[in-house]
Image (cartoon, rainbow, N blue to C red; front, side, top):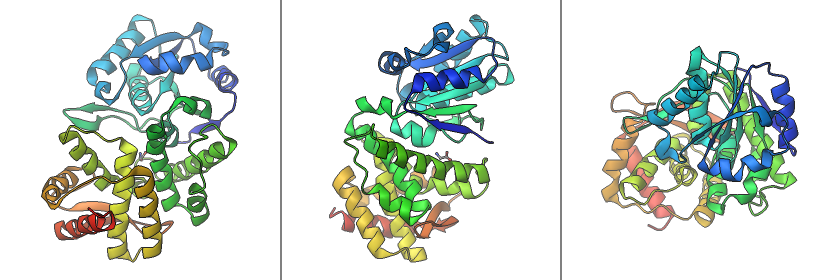
Amino acid sequence: MAQQVLFTRNIAAALDEIVAGCAHDRLFILTDDNTGRHCLPLLSESRVLASARRINILPDDTHKTLESLASVWQELSTRHATRHSLMINLGGGMVTDLGGFAASTFKRGIRYINIPTTLLGAVDAAVGGKTGINFNGLKNEIGVFAPAEAVLVSTAFFRTLSKEHLLSGFAEMLKHGLISRREIYERLFDTDLACPDSEAMLARLEESVAVKQHVVAEDPFEANIRKSLNLGHTVGHAFESLSLQRKRPVQHGYAVAWGLVCELLLSHRKLQFPLDTLRRFAEYVRSNYGVFAITCNDYEYLYERMTHDKKNNADTVNFTLLSDIGQVVIDQTATRDEIYIALDLYRDMFGL
Ligand code: GLY
């Protein structure tokens, strides 16, 4: 499942070059309301886009639905897409996930190119071949593994992102640092998110995406080591659900950052992950992401959410944990008591 990822300072020229190398009859570009307005203009110099047929969908995860997907299939069909057509997905994770799924199922699969416009998309969603939609109230319930022909990454799109959106994507970079090597991890602490379009940011991003690509190349269908990318997400998804239930949703990456703290606490208790490294990480999260407030009354709900995660069998909760930076141990189960203790420790650490 080789996937070409290009980092560029000239996105329009890079797109022209990639599209020229992909023989096709018709070219389509998928946007949502936001990327159509704010990101498409950054591609105005592209020659190939002049002939592209645009398909637009409504933005946000709430529209990552069967209805939006059907509207993309409908447009492709009505506007004479064939098996030899090519689609460009311009957007965050919602657009690249849904667009990738639409492309890989239309006429049993047409090729597609991802241009992520958010840091979260660039470092995670657009890379690695996972596509899909939400269904029956469950995130990414329906989908396929189908890698993009190419992923084009430009930090130019990040100039207009809010600090919250940048921090959300940065949490996945922290995760990639934790599962890879100490040098990669340490360099992240010097990253200045106030300059998201800097050379330094592009370099950190390349390093981070390379971590994901390496893991995906080894285990494209998540039979084993790709599970390392789930670090922080078992608790993180439960926090995300709780925030939705409270009607005060938090960004995905924020939930992952707090989830990482909890899962490093579990790692410390079960695998002796070093306490000084854990404390420094938790302090970084506290000062940049703040704290997700929970009480012991939330434990049961959080535990239930963790057992419903699609990575689990019956009542056991499966985690990816670390014995140190870069030392990943997959398929670690934790009992309800062990999880409750980790949540107690999280509250102690964050003064809750
Ligand atoms: N987002 C985790 C993965 O791509 O496997």
